Image 1 (tube, protein in one colour):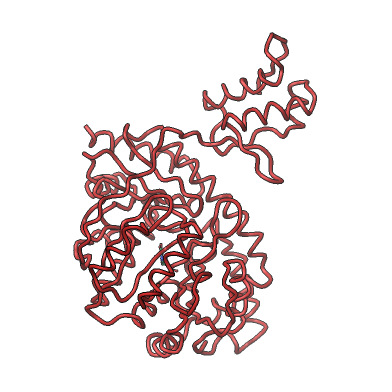
Image 2 (image 1 turned 120 degrees about the vertical axis):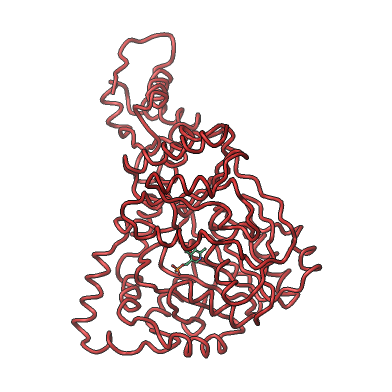
Length: 479
Ligand SMILES: Cc1ncc(COP(=O)(O)O)c(C=O)c1O
C-alpha cells in the first residue's frame, strides 16, 4: 500500500481516507476485499491508531468501507445508481403455467460441470460442510449398526424434529417436535401442503414472479394459479390482495416471505401479520416456503409467517437444501390444522425418508456447530452477492436494474426492454453459461427481459469472465 508521508493542508486522516478511496476507484482494492487492520494501517502510514481509525470511519461514512464485527473493515460495493427491478403489471387472470418449457433445460444444467452455474439456485458444494456431514453419517452408521438402516416412519426421526423445534424459537414460532413432519426436502413439504389443502381444479394464489418449481408443481397437481403482484422490497402487495381475493375464489396462497426466490424481498413483520390475518379470516390456507430463512446477510434471523398464525392456518415448509446439504434431501413441514391429513398422505406417498441423512442433519444441528457454520456461509453469500453486483454494474448495458437482497444468494436482474431473456439464455448456454430466464418465473410468459443470477459459488476468474461475457451478449441485444 502506498504511503503518504508529506503533510499538506488537509488533515492527515482525510488524506489517508482519500488514498484508500483512490485505490478503490482504481480497483486496486475491490468490493469484498479486507483492508489492513487499523493497527497495521497506523504502522504502515506512521500515524497514531486513532488517526487510522478516523480515516476508516470517514470511509465508512462515505460508503466505501464497512466494519464487520470481530473481522475488520471491508470494501463495499458502491452501486448507488442501480435501481431495483420494477414490479411488472400482473394481469389478475387465472393461469396454468403452461408456457414454462425452459424448465427441463434448466434442470439439465444442474450437474453440467462444463457450464458456469449461474442458473439453478444451488449453492456450491465446496462451500457446504460435506466432509463433516459425511463423517457424522459414517459415525452414526458405525455406532448404531441397525438404526441407520431401518424405515424412518412418519412423522420422522424424533431427534431431528426436536432439533428443529428448538430452532423454531428463533423464528418466533415455539413449535413442538409433535408439530413437525420430516419430509424429502422442501419439495415434498410443498407438495404435501398443496395436496392437503386443494383439490384438482382449485386456484392457488402465488407471488409473481414465483419459484418455477412451484409453478411446475401446480401444473402437475392440476391446480390453477392466481398471480399476486409483489413489491421488490416488501413482497406481496397487501393493498391489491383483497381485490384479487374478492374476484377469485382461492383455496390456498403460497408465499416465500424471507428472501424470496427470485426477487429477494424480505416481508416486514407487520406485513406478515397482516397477510396471515387477511387470509386466515377468509378460511384460505397459507403455505409458507421458508427455504432461505436461515440465510440473512446480517442481523437477526427473520421471523416466519407461522409466528403470526393464531389458529394453525399456516403450513410451514422448510429444508436444509440451501444452507447445508441439498443432496441429503432433508426438509420439514409444520402443517397446523392439516397435520393428521399430511401425515396420512406422507405415509402413502413416500412411507419414510432416508434415515442416515436425516440422523446426520439432526446431529449437525444438535452438536455440529450449525450456528457457527451459518455465520460463515452467510458471510460468503453476502460477499458473493456483492461481488456479482459490482461485476454486473461494470459489464451490463445501461438501464439494467438489479435487486439488493438482504439474504440468500440470488439476484433478480431487469435488462433493457429490447433484451429477450429466453434468447439471451440460449446464447449464454452456447457460450458455456447457465442462467435462469425471467419467463420461467412468470405465470403468463412475462418478465421476458429479466434473468435470475445464482451467486451460490465462490467468486473465481471463471465466474468473473462469464458475467463479463453475459454483459456483452446483453449489450449486443439491447441496441
Ligand atoms: C423457493 C424454493 N422453494 C423450494 C425449493 C426446493 O427446495 P428443496 O431442494 O429443499 O426441495 C427451492 C429450490 O430452489 C426454492 O428456491
